[in-house]
Length: 237
Image (cartoon, rainbow, N blue to C red; front, side, top):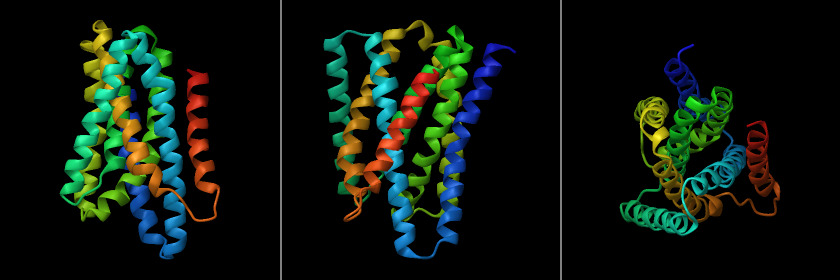
């Protein structure tokens, strides 16, 4: 199979899970009416999703980014990403909104999809594993982003249109990674490290404070399960 066809195929399946996660959240919201149960499950999935995102930073974005640049440049890029998303987060908060899960999903999804396109040219089997891992990550992240957008007064129709469009971001990013960034490794690493700084800021500023359940250890375990998924993905890759 032609390498470009493979990239499109696997990046499509890794991206379409953004839409699937939103559909699952919609059905869950319609079927579960008990507020306590609904809030408990959403909190657990938020903690799991947070662990998945953090594992992507720790096991993929930072290690891959540092391989492609030097330590000083890497630190500057990492902290630049943190500061950039601090400013974005404050700007959104000043307008009365909060879209941490959506921003974290994009910061995670786009750099990994760029890497996916670049990796396929060198090792298609590793690219397939990465595509599966990205797809699994997108499910809990988009599930949580659905509820975040609902709180922001988005309609179901507008959320699904947004998620449908975001599903194809992976294809575009993977093709850019294959045709452009595969020969510019330092630029690819820079994108990864910038995104890492932004993700870490978002996790501890906006996501982690929301996943606490009084007198319960389960959210912390959910976070660890998410990181465990990252460990499995890293070991398989």
